[in-house]
Structure formats: structure tokens, C-alpha cells
Length: 167
Image 1 (cartoon, helix red, strand yellow):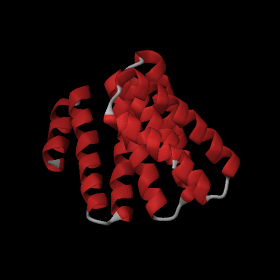
Image 2: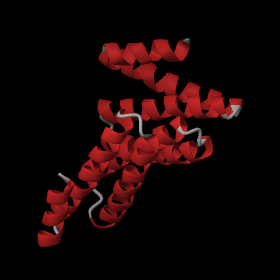
Image 3: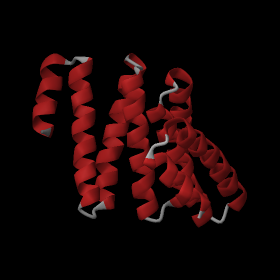
């Protein structure tokens, strides 16, 4: 997978081939994470994030922004697992800002749900760092967002998130 993506990128140099490379590194990181190797996952996620950031300088599409936010969230997660809470907060805050932009630009249910997930992740990070004022602010923003989504869509996922935030 990675070798093929690297060969395609080298041969063509197109945006699509570079995006395939971003995804290849991300998928390897994801496999490492699922295998319990957070440190290795972080290495691959970092490569993916750097390539993604460079690619977005050239073509900043909604799809690229969405995927970049996912990569940032994954970096936040592996840093939380490794106990690097400050770094986790930096990555998640960047994902949050990108997701806010996506909500402004698209307004989709998916974009708003992803934004709600970033708020929820920040609550966990802030609580672990004993930054309770920020945790409460993130909690309230996330709850407000998930309640609106639950009212608008009636989906189980939105109602479940509201319930989880209220616990």
C-alpha cells in the first residue's frame, strides 16, 4: 500500500497521488494504534499530517480539510494514550478550529457531529489536566451542539452523545 502510493506520487506528482500517500501513512498509523502501538502510530500520523498540511497549501478542499481534522484528532488520541496531555490538547484544539471552519463552510450534520466530538475530546483532556473551567466550557459547547443535532435529526448517535455528556 505505502510502496504503491510512493511510486504513484513519484511518477505523477499529482494532488491525487499525494493524497493517496497521506492516506497510506494514516492507515498504517491507524493499524499501529489498533495494535496497541501508540508511539509507532504517532510517527505515521505525524508523517501523514505533515504531508496533508503541505497538500492543503495547494488544494484546500472540504474533503482535504475533513481528513486533516481526522488526522489531527488521531494525533490527539495517541498523545492522550501516551499521557502527553498538553500535546493532545494542542492537536485537538487545532482539529476543533478546523472543524468549526467546516461547520461554517458546509453546515452539514456530519461536520457538526465531528465538531461535537472534538468538544467531547477536549473535555477529557482538560479534566485530566485539571483545567476544569476549560473542561466545563467545552462540555457546554458540545452539549449545546449535540442537543441541536438530536432535535434536528433524532438520530441515536446524537441522542447517545447528549446522554454521555449529561452523565
